[in-house]
Length: 93
Length: 369
Image 1: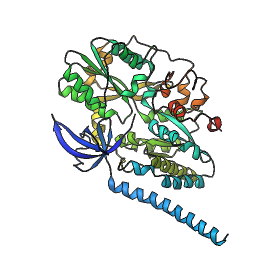
Image 2: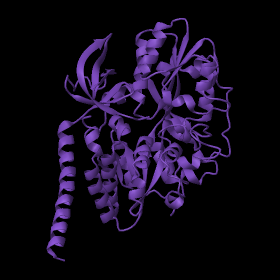
Image 3: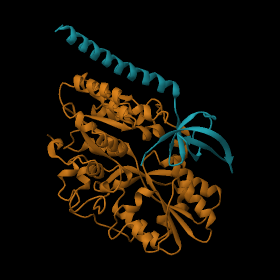
Image 4: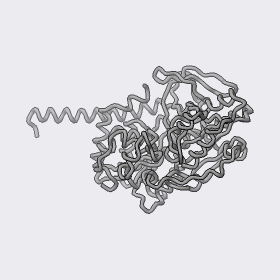
């Protein structure tokens, strides 16, 4: 029920005093109310949308930074695994 | 899809699983509050791969599941009236009332319409000035800004034929009720990422302090949930209890202030009944006096509609995390998604439906095992 889907704003306009816009969700476009994020977003920004309302602007900088930490963690695991395999092949305990 | 599919990377998930299993020196008991997280956890088998490190208790964060039978019966009553167009999110249509559900009322000729956004219900009211349009305003804090905007908009547009049947609930009082229960086994919480997107996490800080529990604001994709669990386990292993934020791409400490402002204007805090749990003080939202004219409970006489919950259904124990769905005698036999007795079997986010749909039927993951 509290599902929120990230999408990209492709258009912004005013509907009788209400900030609305079109948001693209991987090819599917929907009309979304932007009133709660209107002062911080523009066309091209990503927003999290819940029941037709943008509830936050995706912080792309934070997303990149934390994702990088996760990626490095999994790459580190892969390196350790490769080292283990190499050690085993050379007969090193 | 950007900011979605990359959080499902299997290799990164494996790395997080390994870290959680490596860092836990004992088995910790955690609760994910939100039903959307329950769905991901059970679907992806996260509770099973981590079962040596954590037991996941599924919390009451499914608004469909906790809407009281009485409110469902009131919705059914309104939807059956010939002068009413009843509008609702699709999830509510199959929730069993005392005698039937909204889908059956629709099949018998009742005017029941599914809406994607509460503003769609306002549009229906504008297009049908000779009919009463009622919207079933359910949800947690995530949905409150959308529902508040619908009511505010209806007033702006001068609509006199629009009203809302409100069954709004809020998360922190439910967490207090769980923590105050003498049988509570929860040692750490994953807080609901979208609830906190709206509300921020300031109100969780006194809870974490008073009950000495870690609370980690967590997102909904598999990597989000694994990272949230990892952060919670780290706190427990290090003897810390703080509020931390895993879902940084969407949640700020203060939440969405504009959304909070409109919610505070349109709604007020009220005591609310939770299906299977009972009344929790200050745990819900009702319309404020300024917007009382849009209250369906005032516009239509609904006070006489009272209901008792069926005894065989142990949804309340499931929602409080006291039992796992398969511990209920009705699970999978008298109660299935096709013929549900309780709401947790209806909603995709209900713990019972998640266990049923993803075949988590074996007993090895039971409470206390």
